Image (cartoon, rainbow, N blue to C red; front, top):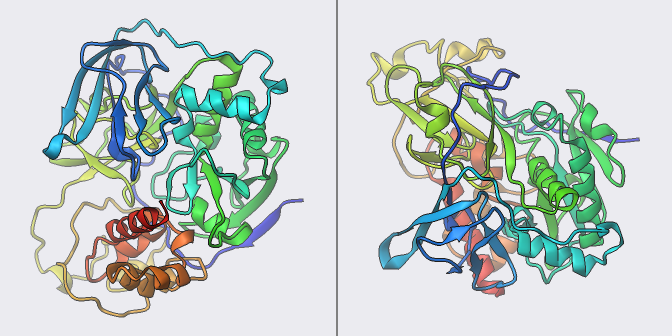
Length: 450
């Protein structure tokens, strides 16, 4: 019988523009894709190709200098049309022009059920699927040389306008089960699934070989880090692997088909979209196909991921490696008459600054306005109400800023990644880039451990 864990801290932000549970079919075929090293924190890429090379889906584009066994592969067949660089020749994008032929590198998975854990791991490493496995602590691509104490998969996303895995993975149950079987054998550790206690999770309840726990509470209840904290907390020297459900499906396809099949169903959502719905695409695809002609009037901000922890991109940008949604909201460049003096019935307020708190179920069409400027820290006790973990968030942030490694360890740096502090950044009266601070602290800890 599954255990139900109730969480009180957190905040649900009800936004308009949730994707309708229908597939939007009026999109053309995506012709361009980009694999970005910046999607993988601490990665030092080593190119295995050059501009003009022909590749297949599953062909190696670059490896990690720190872990050369881990391959980062092309999601489609075609030609490497461009390798974009920034200052000091830092690689920003490897652009692949699709040939539309859907040719794949073949991997020997025949009789994979009888293969050893080491043999399965080598297939995953070579195929380009390994980067989907994220290691806690630090929120980086899992170290292939370590053995985790557990594997954790959150099967729901509680972020605003997030994808509904019940809908997007409804036809992928067999691949999901295969992915579970493989990762359990590779990790040689128990696998935990986290489900939403408020909604039925029919496609996951029948999965075997896992321990299921349910979580009842506001966002960030769907974050893997929050769930791990309550089920299998991470201590110094311990490791937990995490995958999102779509990654488990891609892993399952690798062993059911013998190819790197990065197809996924993503949500196109937000008040800046005319037709919020789901679309079938491939990882790292150009987003122009989905947003051109589908944006509301006025200037809009396009985000790969959700509004709290996603990355701003342009209309000719690309879907992030780990992202399963594109969110579009209005840019908020206009000045507001009376500002804070108005009753704010149409404004969202966590601190009850506006009267809108009297209508908790109301949906809001929020824009990108920050409603304030950066200033010195004000100790309000807000962060503790938004992080459902037994840590002191404000003190941890200050320890990171001070680069006090011992204090960071004592305050819980091993248990968090930036998305766990996204709500703190949203509600922060000081308008601090808290997620960037957390990422800096994690990178510092990685540098100290290597």
